[in-house]
Every structure is written in structure tokens, then in C-alpha cells.
Amino acid sequence: MNRTTNVTPKPLLEVRELGKAYRRYRNELMRVVSWFSTVQPQEETWILRDINFDVAQGEAVGIVGQNGAGKSTLLKMITGTLRPSEGYIRTHGRVAAILELGMGFNGELTGRQNVLHSAGLMGFTHAQVDAAMDDIEAFAEIGEYFDQPMRVYSSGMQMRVAFSVATAFRPEILIVDEALSVGDAYFQHKSFDRIREFQRQGTSLLIVSHDKAAIQSLCDRAILLEQGRVLQDGMPQDIMDYYNAIIAKKENDKVEITPLDSGQIQTRSGSGEASIRQVSLHAASGNPLDVVDVGQEVELRITVAISADLPELVIGYKLKDRVGQDVFGTNTWHTHQVERELSAGETLTYRMRFNANLGPGSYSVSLSLHSSDTHLTHNYQWVDHALVFQMVNMEKDFFLGSSWIMPTIECERQTAKSSESNESV
Image 1 (cartoon, rainbow, N blue to C red):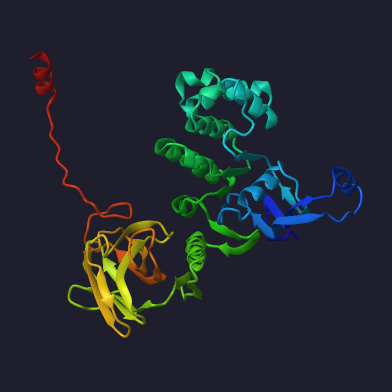
Image 2 (cartoon, rainbow, N blue to C red; image 1 turned 135 degrees about the horizontal axis):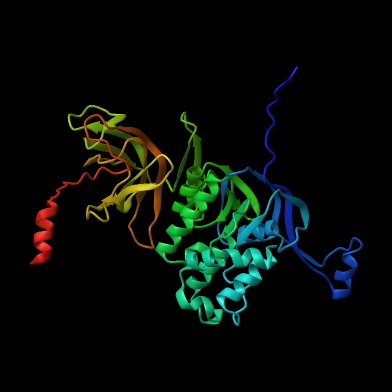
């Protein structure tokens, strides 16, 4: 009898108990001895410790964290350019990496020669690289510079060549470390399109970036590193919200994490000197809403409680789509409506009216209370997922996207006879 069993596919990347330490010994002899026996180092600094995660086929994982969290060190160990001090890494399939800009390139060689050299180190034959050279040159789009020494390249041109050669052959795992942030907007869009195409074909992506939009648009999940350890592993939007809260915590702000019924995570941070007491969405008639028609006039009502004397208060709101991408945001600093000289015990009620020119889907509202819009801003409270509502299209013509910006379309037609007449004049 034939029996069908569900077998979980093996992940393309396995990271187990991974750690990296830099050790200093009394002298070089003791360092050499440590290779063959246990020798206590004079000083030991752990950069990463107890890192565990898997990456499945076709999955995109973002690695985020503050400078010094260990992100680049982790990627270098995965690519094999750095040796772990403990734990292990298993990869199943070919890994292509774009790490430090220009790493492995020779400034005296031309772009073409560097492509041959780099692709050779990746394990491809001269014939394979020659067959792909035209496509690599065309994708990089650097013109005659492709046959000039790389020392005359700008950082953006180096990135173009690095990305083009790393993705000339579809890898099973693609690793990117901030390099795309160097390129111009046009090439970034082009690169992300290629990455998404690889993902559709089954390539797994591991990307380090401080670009919130890139993490949330490309990744299925994100891992937050803090002081060399995994602090959170979850949905990109939740991780980025928590990451921002961690940064706020450095100002001695309180951070609260609350699971919502929807499965999302709500993050609150701030000193608490002003706080959100209530938030609701209403129709123009005043009726409360949780489902909004495209283009409908709505009113966002927010009640704020003041618990300490404050010199000024700015309130801001931000609309996000279902994957956490910013749709629109503003605050009362930019609208020139800052409240000043507030006293403890006061309550403020804000009414923000706008037309919901949004596409169908789920949206959330994030709220912020702070002192100003300068580098001296003091965070009283930040609340993610303060409100969630659904947009539906009940009356408008069909359209795509997250914004309703329906145009007026005009068309002028000419017969073939009138066109010929115009050309003969």
C-alpha cells in the first residue's frame, strides 16, 4: 500500500549555537599553542553568542540591529570569510554574497577583469563567465567604464558591478549587507526587481539593512540582534517597531510589548508624561467606523492625558499598510499647531479630518506624542497599531495600489487620412 507522508523540507541555511569571540594572548606563541590545546586567553571579547535560526527555501530574512550588534560579523561567518568560535553553520546550495563594498576587487584591474576574477572565485569556469559577460555588462550599465581600471570608479559604480556579478547566476542563498544603499535610486529599484524574481524562483535572501522600507517590502521575517544576541525573531513590521522602541529606550523611556488579537504586536514606548487615552475613527456624521469606503471623509479622534507640566506638545499620526509600509504621516509641528505650556491633569481631544483616498486593504494608525520636531525631541509616547481599520471599494471604478488618485483621462483620435494630411504640410 502506498503511503503519503508530509516531510518538512530541509532549510537552505541552518545556524546553531553560533558564537564569535576575539581573544588576546600574552604572546603569539600562546596563540599558536591554543590551536592544539586549551589555553586561557589574556582577554576575550564576544561579538556574537548563542545565535540560532533557519532560513527556508524562498524565504527572505532581514537582520537588523544597532551598530556593533554583530550583523556584519554574522554574515561573514555564513559566507565563510570568518571562522566561528563556537557552533556551526550548514548551507545547502550555492551562496552569493555582496558584503563590504569592493571586497575582492582589484583597483588596477578593469571591471571586466574583476568580473572574471570574482566569478572564478565563486567557482564558475572561464567559459561560463564569458557566456554571461554580456548580460553582466548590460545589467551594470556603466558604459565604457567597464573596460577601465576600477580605481577610477565611484562607489555606486563598484556596487553596480558587484551586484551584477553576484547575481549573474541565480544562487540558492543571496546575502546582501547594506551595499545597495550606496547605489542610485534607479539601480536600487532594478536590483530589488532582480531579487524579487530570484525569490519567485526559490532563492532565499538574507539582508542586513537600516532601510525599514527594504526590510518590510522584501522580507518574510526579521531578526533583531542586540549586543551580539538574538533579541526578537518575527514579522518584519513588529521587529522594526520594537527596534525603534529599543532606540527610544536609550533615553530611559519605558517600552511595553502587547500581543493583539490580530496576531500582531503593539509596541508602546516613551516617558509617559503625556499619553494616548483613546483613539477612534468616525464618519463625517459622527458614527464610529472600522470599515471605510474608498474616498470617504473620516475623522480620527485622539484623547491625550497630560500627567506632568510640559513646555510644548506635538502629536503626530502615521498610516501604514498591512505590511507596515508608510502611506502617509504628519504632525502638528508641520501644521503649525503646537500646544504650549500644558499643566498636569489636562486632557486634550484632537480631531483630524481627511478623505481616505486609500486602496482596499487593511491599514493601521501609529501615534506619537513628543516635544518638538528637532534633534532635541523628547518622546512622551509612541504607540504602534493604535488603531486598525479596513478599506473597501464600494462605489469607485476598479484600481490597483494603496492610493486612490483617479485621473481625468482625455484622448484625441485622428483618422489615418488626417494624419497623412498633417505630415504633408
